[in-house]
Image 1 (tube, rainbow, N blue to C red):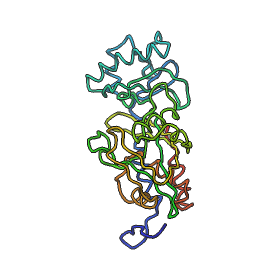
Image 2: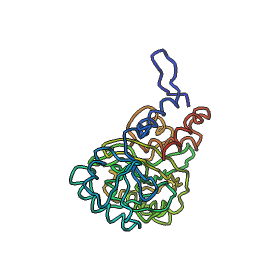
Image 3: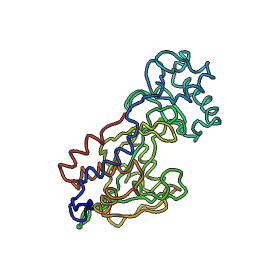
Image 4: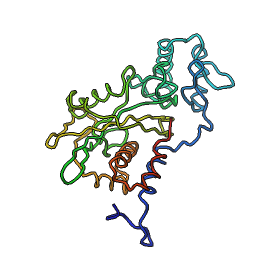
Length: 298
C-alpha cells in the first residue's frame, strides 16, 4: 500500500489514516449543539433548531410551545398523523420565508435511528429542524482475478449537491414508511437499472453516521451501507437524472482518489473508507485509527 503514496516536504510518507481523516472531519463539523435550541415531539427530543427558526416558530403558537427545555409541538398534537399535518402546514410557510424548501418527499421523524415514528417532515426541512435523516448506500463490487473493482457513479453536473463528483453505485434517502432494504431495491432500479431480484441479494455491511452543519441546517445522517457482488460483464445503466454514467474502477485506484483528492461526494468518502477497511485495503494499524471516527454521530 505504500507504493505511490504522496510524500511531505521532507520526504516522509503521510500516514494514510491522517489523510483520510479529513473526510471524517468534513462530515462532522458540528462537534456540539451550542447555540441551537432543542426540538421535541412529546417528551422526546428529535432535533435542534437554529435560533432564527425558533424565533419564526413563535408566530405559530397553535402548533409549537416554548419552555425551559426548548421548543415542543403542542401537546394537543398527540398522534404522528396530527404532528405530520401540522408540520406540513407550517413547513410550507417556513419555506416561503427562506427556511429550507418543500421537496414533496416525506421522511420519518424518530428520536433515535431505531425508534418509533413520531411524525413525518418534508425532506427539504429535515436539516432545518435538525432531525435524523436516514439513507442507503450500495457498494457495487466486481471480484476479478486482478483484484477487487468497484462501480462508481459520475453525478450529473446539474445536481445541486456535489455536481460532477463520484458517487456510490446507488444511494438515496429512506422515505417515510419504507425500511432500508425496500428503499435499496427501489433506488437500485431507479438509479442504476438493477433488477429487484439482483438488488435483493445485497448484504448489509454496517451503519455510519455523522453530524454536519451546512446551508440546509444540521444534517444528522445515518447511512445504511450494503455490498452487492455483481457478475463481470453486467453493466449498470442510469435510469434517472442522478448520474451521467457509471465506471468500474480498481479498488486501489478508488482508494487513492479518496486518499489524495476531493472528487468524491462528501459522505460517500465515509462509505468507501468503511469498505476499504472491511476489504483489508487499509493497513490494520491505520484502520484501527479510522474505525472509531467513522462510528460517531447520531
